Length: 494
Image (tube, rainbow, N blue to C red; front, side):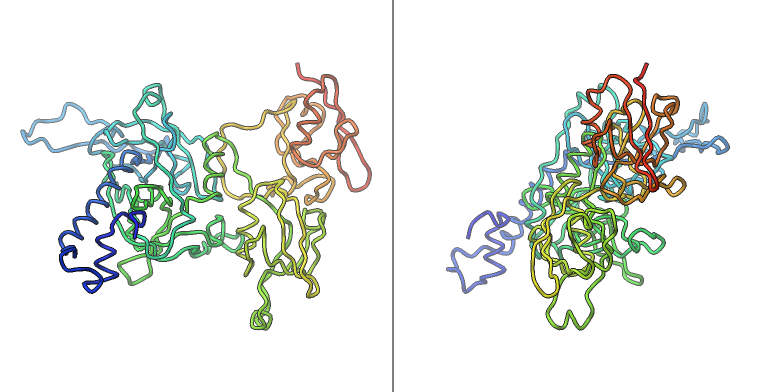
C-alpha cells in the first residue's frame, strides 16, 4: 500500500483490512484514523483556499428604479447624517446574486461558471485577504458554461494572487473523496470560502435538459451530452464556479449545478471535469478569444431497439446535409458511426459530445459501419453554430472593415445568407461588415458568401485571411451565387 492513494493509509487499513489484517500493536485507533483523515482534509483545503474568490453580481439600476439606501441600527441611537446607497465594498452589502470563482492567473484572471453572469450586472471579486476588486468579463462561452473575469486596476495586477493547481479530472473513480470550496448563500462575502466534502458518486453524467430551450432538444451546453462529475458533496446556491478538489488540494472539477428532486432535501451535485477539453477552452478564454467547436453536418438518430438487442452500437446518419464536411468527405445516409478518434459511440449524445470536443479543422477519424462492413472515414470538421451570447474581447482583426467565418457557424435568423446555400464548404461567410468601411462602400453585407479572392478559392477563414494579407490595391471578392457568379471590388482603406 502506498501513500499515493489519498495519503490516508491508516484509514484504508482500518476500513478495508479490519483487525484481522494487522498485528494488534500496529492497529490504529479510531481516533488516530479520524485524526489522519482530518489532517489530510484541512491541509488540502488550506492548499487550495487562497485561490478561491467570492463573486458578487450587482444589477445595474435602471433610470426609473429607486436606489435602496443602506441603513444599519446605531446602538447609541444617533440619527444618520445621510442615507446612502449600498456599496459593494461594505461588509454588510448583500449582492443581487453571487457565485464563486478560482484564480487561474497571477495577473488577475478568475474562472467561473458562465451561468453566473448577467448582461445587466457589475461584478466584484473578494479575495481571501478581504480585498475587493471590480471585475469585467474577459471572455465567456455558453457551450462550455465557462467564463473568465479580469480584475480591474493596477492594484489588482500587483495583488498576491495564487492560481489554483489543476489535477486530472479524467482520472477520477467512483468512491474517491472530494472536497468543495464555495460561496453558498453569499456567506463568503469576506472572501473566506466555505468547505464541504463527499465522494465521487458517478462520472460522465447528463443534467436534465432545459425544457424551454429549443437548442438540441434543450441540450445547450456540451456537458448536457454526458461529461459531468456527480458528487454527493453538498452544493448550495452560490457554489457555482467553485472548485471540486481531490485530497491533494488539486482542482479536478468546476462546480456548476445541483439537481434537487422534488420532495427531497438532499440533491446531487455536478461539476465540469478538468480534462483536455476543459484546458482547451480555458486557454482560449484566458486570451479573451472565442471558443470554437467542431461541426460534422449530419442529422443523427439512435439505433432501432431491435438493432441494439442484436448487439449493434453507434449512431446512424439519418441525413447527411449537403455542403457540410460529412458530405464532402464521404459519409453516407444510413452509415452507423461507431467511434470518433477511438472513443466508442453508443448513441447520438455520445456523437455530439465527441465531435464537439474537437476544434474546427480537426480531422475526426470516424469508425463507420456501412452495409455491415466496418471502415474508417476521415472528416475535416467545420465550425459548430453556438447559440447564446458569447463574450469575446480579443477578436481577429478586421480586413477593410469585414470579418469572415465558417458558413456552418453563421447564426442570424433575420439575415439569411444571400445568394446560396448556407451549408457550404466552398466559401466563407461575411459575419460582420463595419458601417462606412471600404467593404461596406463596395456593397458587402452580412451573410454574403465569398468563394474567391482575386481568383483564388477560399474555404476557411484562415485561407481568406492568408489570401488578403499582402493585398495593397483593390481586391475582387467573388460571391457564391446560385445562378451566376458576381463580385465585389473592395478598395484599400484610407
